[in-house]
Length: 318
Image 1 (tube, rainbow, N blue to C red):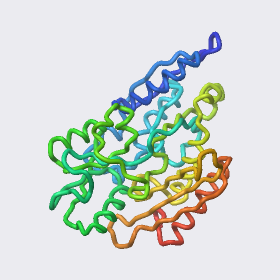
Image 2 (cartoon, rainbow, N blue to C red; image 1 turned 180 degrees about the horizontal axis):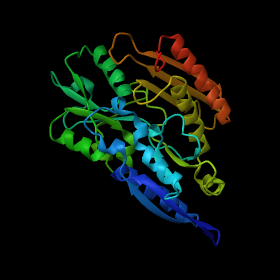
Image 3 (cartoon, helix red, strand yellow; image 1 turned 60 degrees about the horizontal axis):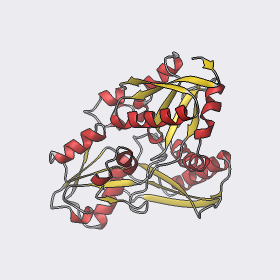
């Protein structure tokens, strides 16, 4: 990669799903507007290839990131654009999160051809989700409605594949991230959006992160105009909860931070943990603290993780 006339030549490593390509193209256009020359390197990851088993059983969401990191390591690409909720809590040595961009809608979306809500589901309905977090929160809501008849079944594949499975009648409804649907112009598929109180989002949901090799200070500088600090502080608090709990997608954990008021420095961080077997009630905690630095955001995340464990939540391997 060379640097001529002030701009950099930047190659973006990206997965080849429609959503991943949208994200990479979005970053490409922003960088081009800043005077850089940008191209994409499309790649298929292990996470894209293994579709017959749940992510929690085959190695977690890091499977979507590994091949992209190899391309960075070998110099075939300069940056990788990720959905932040797919990025493992601890990056391998030699890599850094250089940028967190402004967040899209972080909430979960209810997608169904015929049912307005959980309460609307027919007897013995099937709801699809790929996430243990969504499973425990859906099960909690269904139990509250007395709907033990509803089955929650695994749902894998990219966004288009999941929607096709719904349209084929394999599910009565599915739960997806609102951000992906909105980014691909599929808002019309959203029947309803869950308030965070109903379905607390995953750490980092709706935010894009850009990964680089940690020795690439030129890229750190080039990406700095894309940083959205308000989002970075929120997701740093969320991801710290997940890291402190040993979190991966094999953990039924939600963590969501929001500013107490417009322009406020008070960050309210909520978290929830549930037992996938449903043997114990969902553990929920919330704490608000002034946050103006990443260190303060992480300190808040650690306190919330501690409160979760005190409430009976099990850390991974614990």
